[in-house]
Image 1: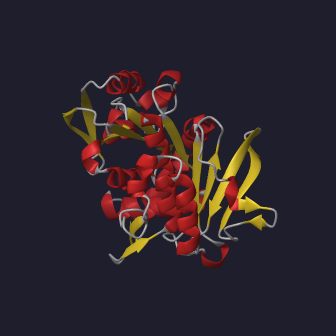
Image 2 (image 1 turned 30 degrees about the vertical axis):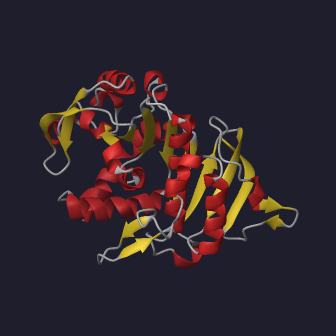
Length: 309
């Protein structure tokens, strides 16, 4: 494998699941091989300044996009950066951090695809698009438990930010190679952990050969894993759907289809042996394993290894 730096982009609105997905992929690849960059650190104003100015963190004018562009260029060239740090707990800035890129760099945040230069810096681009009701639930839980807000404050922030979400965040979906949407099954709408996933696979990068999922009788792997053709934003795409109740046998078969294409992926391919894949921690501290999350992590890892080969 070559020694070039591989950059993965994970973009989505606040509390869309970016950090969960990022941490999982880093654990799968090996945290000693991954550098994680959060574009939230490039805010131009702290929390008090934003409140005084009436500007949200989602607005491009509230972020140093030119510095993100410069840093992506340096990271891609294997060079170190002095990265700012925004502290979500205090709403202020901490001292900057000296960052050297490792083999893989994951860049996650709100505005990662908002300029052409940024978009050209990634090997793989992923956009997270959960249903807005689910994202609101996640944001309430995160911000009340970790960032010192109450539920009413979070709901008001969602309301105030909606115009910027519509204008600046959601349009970035257009540039993604994969659009990832976790969603609750109809029969279990209250469970926001063991979710189904809808993966829109655009032909902008070569995806693994998954057509064997289908045969003359329909889906070879059963109703829990489905592959179909559709259109997204007016263009043809493949759509892979994986239900939370997929069986281990179905998951293994899908794993084989991905892992046979990239030899280096084999070391990550055993869901039985690799307990980091799809790991979630429940509200009471119990550890759960989500097959839809695990296979999403595996598919993104596939593309990162493919780009490195």
